[in-house]
Image 1 (cartoon, rainbow, N blue to C red):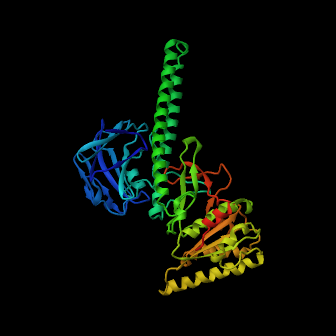
Image 2: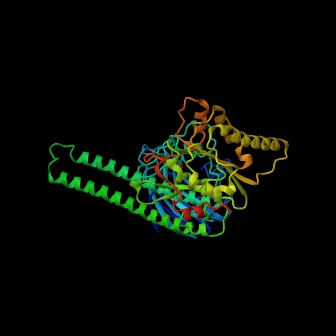
Image 3: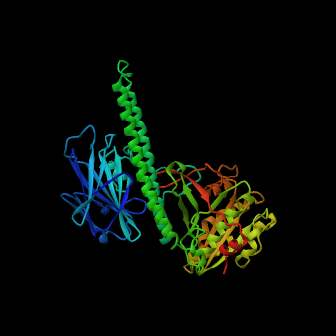
Length: 524
């Protein structure tokens, strides 16, 4: 039987699994069937003593049984919960230590020991979650000092008398299931991800990496705090601080710290190796728009993709693991490449165009380029078959090109309102570089209109320019704030949507060799 650490995950191979838990306190067990955003679909998805069953999940006297094949097909996960028995006396220490057990086919396969330290009276112990067609088990250990009502409210269950804002208290050594997003460079906006097959697979890897990394960081922080506390105790008494006993206490404290950190780093490295192996395997099967530049996918017949790869995420303090950062296509939010100089990010733009062109080989792609500094002349010749007119290098020509796109989007909107709309047969790309210099204020308004209606003509928008989120021009500022920003300056963090941890982004760059550029920017 495996002794799980916080954040660790293992595959489930049985058809039926059973969750149970034990503690010194009297416990109630329950379960939540949740969607991609970790919220229940309805109140029917909360399984507890007054509602002991839902599709595939049943409450029994000794725990919760999950028949995996019967869980609703659109569910992301089943969260397995323990809480203080309301009929039992309230304990000052909350639940105290809890041991969660997972069994499959009648045999225990994993245990997870949780030691709440802040008086938590409700815990998410384990998570049974989908990974493609398979299921996996993850050790969570997230505690709620506000009790079961707060836990349920945080996951979309309406509870009479619950506080409006969830209060969360995660025990040391664990990670939270969702973290705050801050700044302009955000990976997600809190809504469920619009993902499909290849994109979903890579986001699942990213989620596992984020949770494993958060567990490592939490363990390090907990070990440091405990060491500081134990060292302070060892020297608190002036009469004994220089004695052999105090020195021994200091050595033991340091050893306990080092062992905890070593275990956490070993677990993280194990997880990283597993994820890197999974990424290497996926890279051979993914469509080119999501694959690495070295993938054999680029030499095969074009294959459609539900997303594009923008680069790789990493964190130097968390080892060598690098995770592809990918987004859906057509772009559900415009991409804004933060750059003072368009020419400096030409390889980034080239890589982005190559991947956008590769996403829909069965559809015609039309590209409009505004390039006032002529930065992209090195590869625009290769794009001639898909260009919707010559790249614009004169600011006087910007308005007419943008207005033509706006007109097309407005016609599509009228068709939609009249019931005569048909889905776009083209994938259109607008690349607006050097923004907002040389653009009129009305041009920013036109781009804003395209952000609102562009999906009706299958439009993906890419903007290149300095971050204008604080611009004095309200239209430009709102336009900037509506985009997904890609930083090009080192040290600008992105925050994952599961744990709120910071990551660095290495953006993809188009290889500079002419023969490789021709290979990746293929337009037929």
